[in-house]
Amino acid sequence: IPMVAVFDTSFFQTLPPKAYMYPLPYEYYEKYAIRRYGAHGTSHEYISSVVPDVVGKPAEGLKQIVLHIGNGASASAEVSGKPVETSMGLTPLEGLMMGGRTGDIDPAVVFHLIRNAHMSVDELDTLFNKRSGMMGMTGFGDMREVHRLVAEGDENAKLALDIYVHRIVSYIGNYTYQMGGCDVITFTAGVGENDDVVRKMVCDKLAPFGVKLDEEKNAKRSKEPRIISTPDSAVTICVIPTNEELA
Image (cartoon, rainbow, N blue to C red; front, side, top):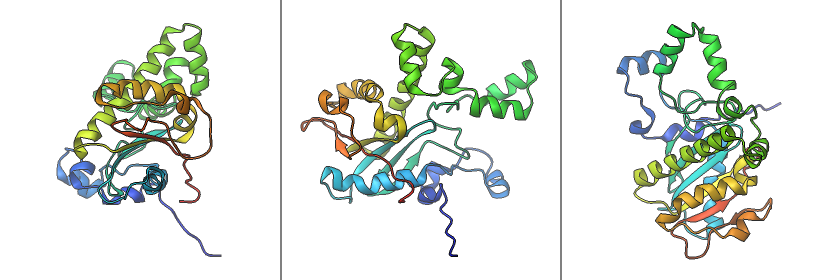
């Protein structure tokens, strides 16, 4: 039986060194292969490949940001279909706030917890990867439960949601300037495809830069690829269901 291995990091093999290297002594890259590998690559590759057809523009020269937002969450930037940045790093822990993962955090937090909370490596691994993010702040990894708590007036849930959006917007700003502009931003995966509240919160933050959301299209539930921005929006906003199995 023919066997095929599809690596979740493959799409990001062509990242430029300035994007995948960490500012450690070079010997650690050579000896231990410490670098940014990225993850969710099959999703980012699929989405960035279908975006040109959805928006009716050629892939050549197109500057796009893909937001794969689910229980795990990652952002990527592509120019002419080739990745130039992604948020996950050596492991899927780096980057956006997630259902159970911290995302970006000062590495010295590890030293502080070892010295003061006397935590082991395994305990820290579990804390950062499974007991943090939305789960750590609200008790729920499911965004629907988070929205319920926010509606009930839970301040921790409101803060967690604000942090979640804040981090997404931070990456959009970073990648836009790294690419020298942005033509399309696409939401995908569980939250990205289904959570109109998060999409609106993100796009509202981008409004001062000419991003205009079509409220009716954003609120509509659909399994079809679609544009949810207005025709005169400075950046086209899409929702495209991912298809990692096809990729």
